[in-house]
Image (tube, rainbow, N blue to C red):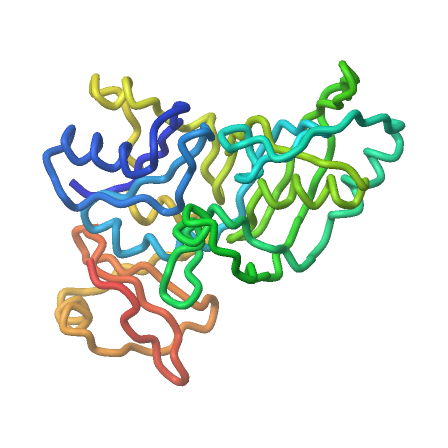
Length: 285
């Protein structure tokens, strides 16, 4: 079985849980996901099966879209509501100031990663340091917020402020950190209270299946080539196909950087990409 599943992950499941369920359902160990979605988050999780594992890295580079709930006036050690409350405060801000702060994040900025994350420093994951109360300088990396806006109304209640944002972000962006940074810009504490990933690249919740649907045989398995509509396709003869299956380079493409190569029976055999004066094997299927 080869292809890509778009999962609408429920709250409480880890990404590894989903991979294990898919592996058991289809009785194959060749299963992997293209980007972790935390247990407290729901939404789009892309899972590759069989030969589709060879294109996982191409899918992980895609932009992502999220809807995140934010509470102003609370700080936790994990930057979300699963963590220990570090401090609270009453917050009184005008809505226009909140809109201005959120909108100001559109573009690129240097983001400090959360201390409870799997990013490695000196060979150890940051959460390993955090769990032992070891202080360490947290790394920063440049991220891009392609679009961000407040959705629904801003709610002021009991000294706290609640609202939701919708954002389209680059690979590697931590939404928990973005929420913290919005609070910092406003001069208040902030915590993420909910998170839904609504899109990963071209894949949205509209074409996602639940775990229960997949267990019951109701799912849409996407072909490898159909997951990349921007990559053109080329059919080759038996002689050319034989050479390609043996890794031979072919003439450089003039109209595109990559191409899926099919044999005359319409079987996908390789993905080639331009390399200097020739097109060479990138992935063999």
